Image (cartoon, rainbow, N blue to C red):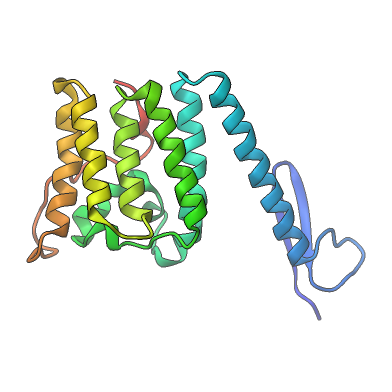
Length: 207
């Protein structure tokens, strides 16, 4: 007997089964294609919105978080909790694991990674004075860079320090030093590093 799965999403109820039967709305392959179409439409709407209002922090925040979440879902199987699935918990993962952040699960989709980096770069054309975008960008590169190149992460932090006023450098240095101490040899889990706070939606707050 074929297994039936019921999924409610976007105001719709999907009944999925590999065997045709009354009430079944999608086969597994048709459901996956439907989700891919929804994701493509969501990305297209996000791209159009930031193209029309390139200086809107809220639109860029929503668009970047959605793009990043697509990669995080792919790598979520290697995470043991919801907290570890979010790039906003970057500093907490550094503090707890004391492992090189660039050795965390990287994306298998290089194309989507490059597209998401491009979106971050385009957001910084107008919003380069927003420290939250720089910090999320650095965390994204550290977590998902397929080449696992620490130089790419360092360059993002260095650019942030150049672009931001001196009064906001403390926020960058907290994450920067946490990442640096995480990739140095000899670190153990009983050492308390720099930047153990942060995380959650508050990281996106404009201050």
